[in-house]
Image 1: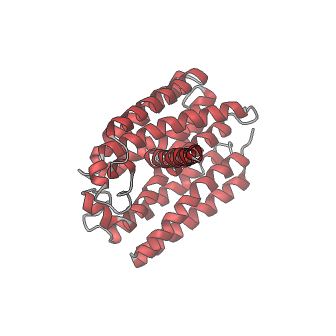
Image 2: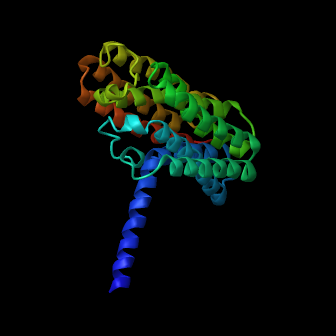
Image 3: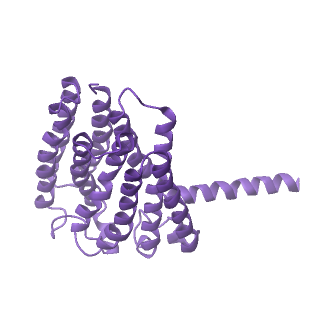
Length: 299
């Protein structure tokens, strides 16, 4: 009986610890980020894709991203306590120590970079290291200083597809840069829609993330429209390069127009409901466009 009770208790402790690590590395966010890297790899290695290579890229990218997210939570643990959306994170509640989180981040970061360097190439490993460092040590502290943090954070946020492309080709070429620029521009309306919804929470922590000093106003809403206006033609560059079939281009164009329509709606109403819709459209936009590029790839 005691053995059964101990087994149940041990299982509960393991489950709780895994849940804490899931929050530490921001599991869903990390998975989404690495998805773009794997799809970019598949686009670049069209016709020569190896399942094991894609798996190793996913693992390496996930570890690097998880390390960056973990360090972000270490630096912001006291600020996380102030916000409803983050108050239950393991560091904010004291369920995990900073020492444990830093150790985990170090192991993940080193392991991820080594996987990229050993199984792929040194350039992809270098880009992974740059992404980790810039996100954790530049973007994170800037969030309380200036809205420029969003621009800075968009740089490591755009690295995953470039890492995937370089992992497949060993070089930074036009196709990889086109997909990277698309993801770079996409992040602004995506992140500003999230910041719009959580503006009150972010204000408690002193984060300055919306582009307007007035917060949720038409100036902020207009920035979304401006970036999506640039995003649409940029997303079609692979089609114009002859890398993606025109049918894929139609899907990409329709996705961009749907993104724009929701941004215009937010500009008209300036309310949280439309900001939430814009966030959901942005979440759907990226995988749809990346998959359209992959499926429409011209060898």
